[in-house]
Image 1 (cartoon, helix red, strand yellow):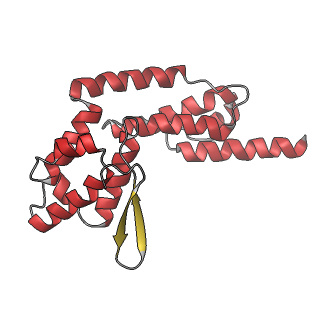
Image 2 (image 1 turned 180 degrees about the horizontal axis):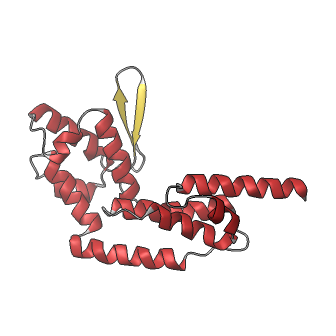
Image 3 (image 1 turned 45 degrees about the vertical axis):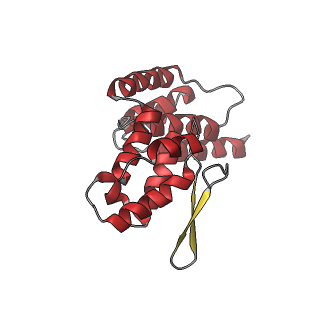
Length: 191
């Protein structure tokens, strides 16, 4: 199973199938979010955090994680007895130590500052880029202030009316995207 390039499948009681993505060199942030969600759905996340030392759940957790790993990573982490060590080893391999994480966060801050909307880009495309940066912040254990994300999203659109009549401190990025798309739709109707 480790050599298979496609996603692995975990069956839940009652015909629900959950797809575990294959871990690659570039998808650790999304991989960790999806696998964590699947482990939580199965009630197994506490084995990763070290709060549950039940041997059967520990092996079940590793059985969910192992098929998602490339063979070289699997061989590296197979030596660990518990799921907590397996998860931490993968995290360090793909994210690095705290010093590396801080450097990556600094790079992301620069990416955010340089983020500009291109002429041929849609609101969805631009908000997707910004959303990806926000998720990368989260995957590195940091939070990008929602107000900062909203302000960075609104900059290219010269949206002083939204800024004047809305509380940007409490507005979510999704709400800002929705308001801007509604405004854009109204403009299209009037044109």
